[in-house]
Length: 483
Ligand SMILES: Cc1ncc(COP(=O)(O)O)c(C=O)c1O
Image 1 (cartoon, rainbow, N blue to C red):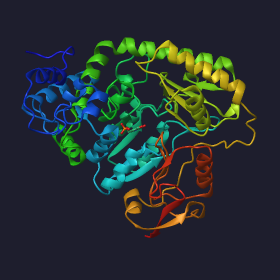
Image 2 (cartoon, rainbow, N blue to C red; image 1 turned 180 degrees about the vertical axis):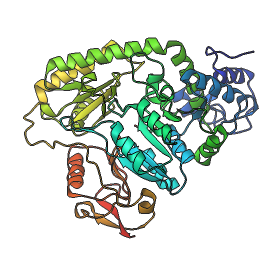
Image 3 (cartoon, rainbow, N blue to C red; image 1 turned 45 degrees about the horizontal axis):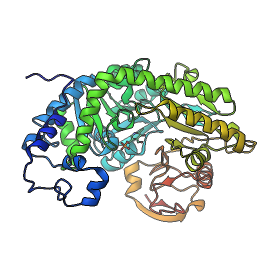
Image 4 (cartoon, rainbow, N blue to C red; image 1 turned 135 degrees about the vertical axis):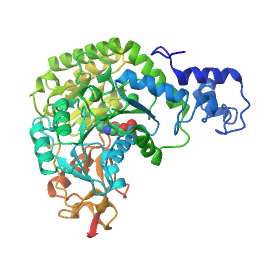
């Protein structure tokens, strides 16, 4: 019998499996929840029964030949790809599999510097060499933008041996580069295009949204279905065009992905794909309407600035994802992270992140008018209670760092630990970043400057969640001691 998008092969196989009451003499050892009653009571018996390991009727994620294979085929069709891999180690694993599928040690890859840590981590693991493109910067908002096509073109001309170009589609703030043009130029020069679409699942299903990677002709795309597509946290798709070898990509995925793929995550991807295919248009129409409404109400308040499509300039802001409610807070005398904290602590509203000058609220399928109104009225209240004179506030958010040596060389070099405030002029041997957004402020191999140190100090003072250094308190930093 042929399969259609109404089917969900992993889900259907799990339903059958649960009905069969199979004797469980395999892992997981909780045996459908009987072995951990407190967890079963918390998560629910049905959930525990679906937490199984791979077996004949349920296929195997490392080498799928039946229901996972079918589910992947349906996902590929739904996303307009040649192949879709079900990923259970987060989009981190999808980004890393993309990079490691096209680059070996010493190969160059062109990418914007404002990539997520997972991309630079991949370089530490596989030894590829980044050719960074400094993204455009909006000075007023203090945010990194997309890549200018002319900068990509220059990087390609100067590095004709590079294997690929990686593009954020979109950035965390919802900003898109001119992906179709970048694909055209990269392909003309025999380079592949990889899209980090951690924040772009909805581009594949909604109307009036930026172009998605597969449609633009990219070769691979890492898509965080768990972020805006409705699947469970940590589940993701890696999409491939016919220009890459499916078998080789699977081998690369299997270098690091678990051999015990969670069926909770797999079934969530299967059902999310079905829902997105059948209902995505409606879902994202509603999402955009909520986000547009939130933007216009927030901007009517004055002070806070919810930015949107007016930023589009045909170049470093080629397009904008209007489902993202990004709000600039500095004119209110408040750092984004302060607004983030006040919303959480005083108003019980959890938003996606706050940085030095902005906050980001994610609006998606699960939202109702109620949540949007609570967010708007909290900002209204905050304007009255918390706003202050912004004079003297730190006014730059994103600093393009200088790369001295490649990430892998720096990470594995001999290092010494220094008090962070005494490290200016040294080469960084590890990462420093605020999480979220997880874009490194410093990555291994980059020059530590006074400007970067004052940015880190300010982020700390304002309460950003800093991570990355071996020292959990971020008081000391590992620097390269010998090249
Ligand atoms: C741009 C970008 N890429 C990749 C990732 C990694 O996704 P995950 O957390 O699913 O591993 C993130 C996570 O926030 C991200 O923002």
